[in-house]
Length: 233
Image (tube, rainbow, N blue to C red; front, side, top):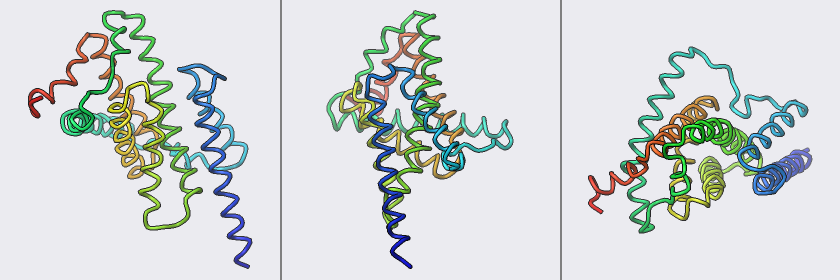
């Protein structure tokens, strides 16, 4: 009686691996260009869950209780994350790699209002909604099916999802991928603790909005302040 259960779990794991690989390869393929590639993947994922009868709650898509409190929680988490990551963690990563992340691509937004608004919309669609649904909701669900029961299963889910998230930001250079990996771990913790993908979407969106505003106003050098004021380099 045990053999069918083992066979089913193996098939489940293989299916999960195929889904993860397909989503990641689709993201890097030339089927649909940025910023619509990740939202397109998410639509396919949602359709797949719908037609397979798999609950959307597995993706963290749940009803928001007490919207006001929910929004306040997201804002406070975003603020705390900015302080911890930008003033403590990122300077250490910069020191380790002896170079800061390369954000020069976004300098083109400085003073260009239409382009800023365009990228702000892209960010909320592709980064906040798309990346969180893909790298937290979907990846966490599929990795939980792929990885066999073990004490380190949860840790492996965090690490693998974080690595995939970091590799997706290769254009930021090694330091950028490293800090993005750590951001992925942090977003993963928030998602794991709450089980609600809308919260991580809001937190991610708020953080990236600050980044784009700094790029638009020509103040991306703000991210260098912790190095100078706290760490002395």
